[in-house]
Amino acid sequence: MNNIFKFLEYINESSILNILTILLIAGYLIYIYSKKETEEKYLVLKIIGFYLLGGFRTVFSLGSISIIIPIGFFMYLMIFKSKYNRVNYKIKDRAVVIGLVMIYISLLSNKIYELVEYRDRTATVQSFSINELKDKYEFIKNDLDISKNTYVDSFNIKYSRDKKIISLNCSIADVLKNKLYYINLSDGQCDISVNKVNEHDGYIIYHDNYNGNDLRVESLLDILDKVKFKEYKDAESYIIGYEKNNQYLSETSLYGINLNDYSTTKLPDESLIIGGVSLEYFPMRKNDNGIESIKTSTYLIDYTIDETDLEFNEMAYEGINLTIKNIETNKSKYITDINEVAYIGELLKREDWQDVNFKVNVSPDLFIEDNKGNKFGLCEEDKCFILREINGTKAWYLISTELYDKINYYTFE
Image (cartoon, rainbow, N blue to C red; front, side, top):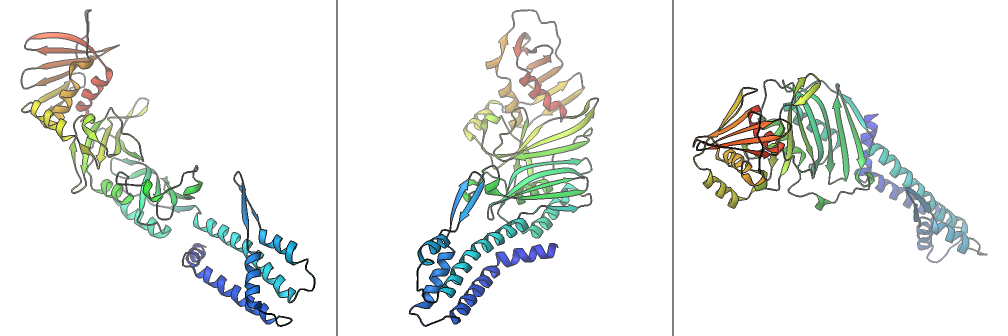
């Protein structure tokens, strides 16, 4: 059956069917010309004209329903059919009828082709690792004849600590062929749905809808194969997600991916980042309630950094090292990278701090200390507080939970 489908696709896409149709019509018109009852001037042109008249149509749309009206055939019935003493009327009638018949043969042919072209596929697959995903996609691409000009609309993959894929859901857009492919992989079964783009919620792909900020399928597969995403000892599984035009999460650690060597670097404050395509990374672990994310990280591609602000930050934090420690989990992080130091330093600016005019009866559990003797202690109870200790002077301030969470993220690494 699959060979039959491929044969139907081939004869349609290679124009063989159109050529055969033209030859058959031409042969039939020659045949009916040979059956002429009497000689008539310009009879060949008249037969061709009546054939074209029979095939003349118009389409009316009523919501999602299209109604085809053979206007040419009705014109023939009203104008020519009623004339008396028509010469060679039998072959002219046949020419009109074959034009009418070709309207519906063409509709049937298109419908059959659509059913073949946009049919769903199912395949049984053995378990494979995330590093084999690129080879598996090449097989799917060749089997479905997907063009090279494809982009990722959405992507979500979950894999175990030993890299075996647990589930995969993605949709890719074939810009050249105006198709959307939905690929779902779970429990050893791969389901692929193919939709016409212009029937997908009224959304139509135009070539200029996709630009340099969109993620090509091949680029994503290279990233998954070559980038060393951070691993965690207590992680049971990992999730990587992407969605076209989705803004990355604000409460995450930002990393940049260098597509030349697929290395990663920690990025500064998100306010310095311009543009970029983002991948969300979630290491998952089990807890009493099921499963939770250990930490959320965002990996950016094709981004730019505001160099002016970055230079200012680097100058301001030159030579500063930080130590972050959570005494409840007994985890700590020593930071020397100037971008990370600048990022944390910008977070600790006092613009959003509120003075506390009451006694604070809590103790910090999260500490930040630099090599200059400055120290901050953060705690999170009903409210979040920060204890600032500089040159022996201590003061409490009220802060947002977001600040506490962003600093505490570093102790998970």
